[in-house]
Image 1 (cartoon, rainbow, N blue to C red):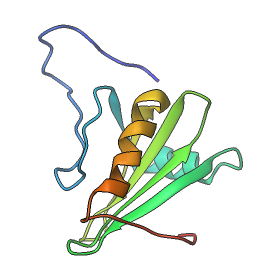
Image 2: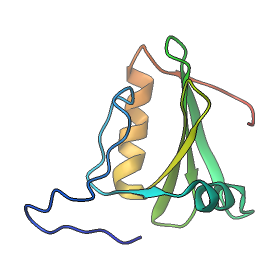
Image 3: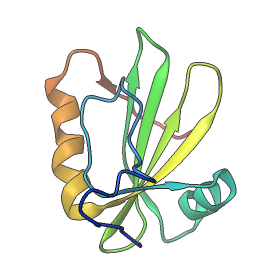
Image 4: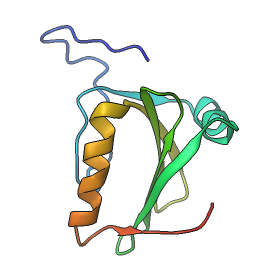
Length: 110
Protein backbone atom coordinates (compact mmCIF):
# COMPACT_ATOMS: atom_id res chain seq x y z
CA UNK A 1 0.00 0.00 0.00
CA UNK A 2 1.45 3.34 -1.01
CA UNK A 3 1.61 6.06 1.60
CA UNK A 4 2.54 9.69 1.05
CA UNK A 5 4.08 11.21 4.18
CA UNK A 6 5.42 14.53 2.91
CA UNK A 7 5.42 17.04 5.76
CA UNK A 8 2.91 19.78 5.12
CA UNK A 9 1.39 17.93 2.17
CA UNK A 10 -2.33 18.47 2.75
CA UNK A 11 -3.30 17.35 -0.74
CA UNK A 12 -4.81 13.93 -1.03
CA UNK A 13 -5.42 13.45 2.69
CA UNK A 14 -7.92 10.66 3.14
CA UNK A 15 -10.20 10.53 6.17
CA UNK A 16 -12.98 8.24 7.28
CA UNK A 17 -16.51 9.62 7.56
CA UNK A 18 -16.98 11.63 10.77
CA UNK A 19 -19.48 9.10 12.16
CA UNK A 20 -16.67 6.55 12.57
CA UNK A 21 -15.18 7.12 16.04
CA UNK A 22 -11.50 6.82 15.15
CA UNK A 23 -8.96 8.25 12.71
CA UNK A 24 -6.13 6.46 10.96
CA UNK A 25 -2.94 8.26 9.97
CA UNK A 26 -2.25 6.12 6.91
CA UNK A 27 -5.37 5.56 4.88
CA UNK A 28 -5.93 5.07 1.16
CA UNK A 29 -9.29 5.50 -0.59
CA UNK A 30 -9.95 2.60 -2.95
CA UNK A 31 -12.22 2.54 -5.98
CA UNK A 32 -15.46 0.60 -5.59
CA UNK A 33 -14.33 -1.96 -8.17
CA UNK A 34 -10.96 -2.60 -6.51
CA UNK A 35 -12.41 -2.65 -3.00
CA UNK A 36 -15.25 -5.03 -3.83
CA UNK A 37 -12.93 -7.41 -5.65
CA UNK A 38 -10.44 -7.32 -2.81
CA UNK A 39 -12.93 -8.20 -0.07
CA UNK A 40 -14.47 -10.99 -2.20
CA UNK A 41 -11.07 -12.60 -2.77
CA UNK A 42 -10.88 -16.08 -1.18
CA UNK A 43 -7.82 -14.99 0.80
CA UNK A 44 -9.65 -12.03 2.40
CA UNK A 45 -11.06 -12.70 5.86
CA UNK A 46 -13.69 -10.52 7.47
CA UNK A 47 -12.51 -9.65 10.97
CA UNK A 48 -15.57 -7.71 12.06
CA UNK A 49 -18.76 -5.90 11.17
CA UNK A 50 -20.39 -3.08 13.15
CA UNK A 51 -23.51 -0.96 12.74
CA UNK A 52 -24.30 2.55 13.94
CA UNK A 53 -28.01 1.87 14.13
CA UNK A 54 -29.09 5.42 14.89
CA UNK A 55 -27.53 6.62 11.66
CA UNK A 56 -27.76 3.48 9.47
CA UNK A 57 -24.01 3.29 8.86
CA UNK A 58 -22.15 -0.01 8.61
CA UNK A 59 -18.42 -0.71 8.87
CA UNK A 60 -16.78 -4.02 7.97
CA UNK A 61 -13.07 -4.80 8.22
CA UNK A 62 -11.19 -7.44 6.24
CA UNK A 63 -7.68 -8.86 6.59
CA UNK A 64 -6.42 -8.93 3.01
CA UNK A 65 -2.68 -9.35 3.54
CA UNK A 66 -0.49 -9.76 6.59
CA UNK A 67 -0.03 -5.99 6.74
CA UNK A 68 -3.19 -4.60 5.14
CA UNK A 69 -6.80 -4.23 6.25
CA UNK A 70 -9.61 -3.07 3.98
CA UNK A 71 -12.46 -1.13 5.57
CA UNK A 72 -15.84 -1.24 3.81
CA UNK A 73 -18.24 1.53 4.77
CA UNK A 74 -21.93 1.43 3.81
CA UNK A 75 -23.55 4.88 4.03
CA UNK A 76 -27.19 5.56 4.94
CA UNK A 77 -27.95 6.46 1.31
CA UNK A 78 -26.69 3.11 0.02
CA UNK A 79 -23.19 4.01 -1.14
CA UNK A 80 -20.25 1.74 -0.41
CA UNK A 81 -16.76 3.13 0.16
CA UNK A 82 -13.53 1.20 0.57
CA UNK A 83 -10.34 2.21 2.38
CA UNK A 84 -6.98 0.48 2.66
CA UNK A 85 -5.24 0.74 6.03
CA UNK A 86 -2.13 -0.54 7.74
CA UNK A 87 -3.17 -3.53 9.86
CA UNK A 88 -1.01 -2.56 12.85
CA UNK A 89 -2.78 0.81 12.94
CA UNK A 90 -6.32 -0.36 12.11
CA UNK A 91 -6.64 -3.30 14.49
CA UNK A 92 -6.33 -1.31 17.76
CA UNK A 93 -8.66 1.35 16.34
CA UNK A 94 -11.28 -1.27 15.48
CA UNK A 95 -11.15 -2.59 19.06
CA UNK A 96 -12.33 0.85 20.25
CA UNK A 97 -15.71 0.20 18.58
CA UNK A 98 -16.55 -2.15 21.47
CA UNK A 99 -16.16 0.78 23.87
CA UNK A 100 -18.55 3.11 22.08
CA UNK A 101 -22.30 2.93 22.59
CA UNK A 102 -23.08 4.20 19.08
CA UNK A 103 -21.66 1.12 17.35
CA UNK A 104 -22.81 -2.48 17.76
CA UNK A 105 -20.99 -5.61 16.58
CA UNK A 106 -23.04 -7.62 14.08
CA UNK A 107 -22.83 -11.33 13.26
CA UNK A 108 -23.53 -12.88 9.88
CA UNK A 109 -22.48 -12.21 6.32
CA UNK A 110 -23.38 -9.43 3.94
